[in-house]
Image (cartoon, rainbow, N blue to C red; front, top):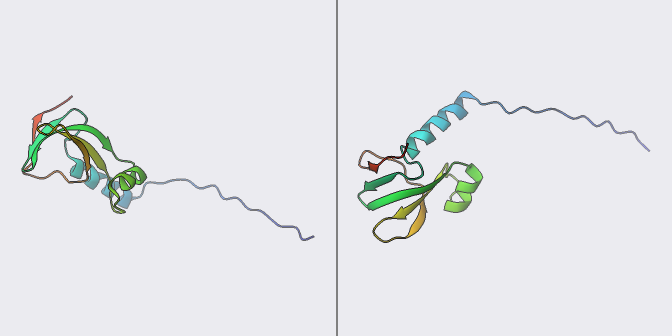
Length: 99
């Protein structure tokens, strides 16, 4: 029987400059939407229920391989909840901020 040499390599997770830049872009795209925040845009008035930044979970929820985040919002007029991956834009505005 032949002896086999098993080598294990310790891996460390490092944050690269590209990872950090992408994280900053994601934070900008989410904007001031934190749970409890009420905002409006051209589509209606919404309350943020949850912000998901886990890549795997956001991609599963939105069914998009490129999703970086998913936001659960409640339409205050219709009373329905749904997830969105829409980015914060200049036409969006906060009506009620939560500390």
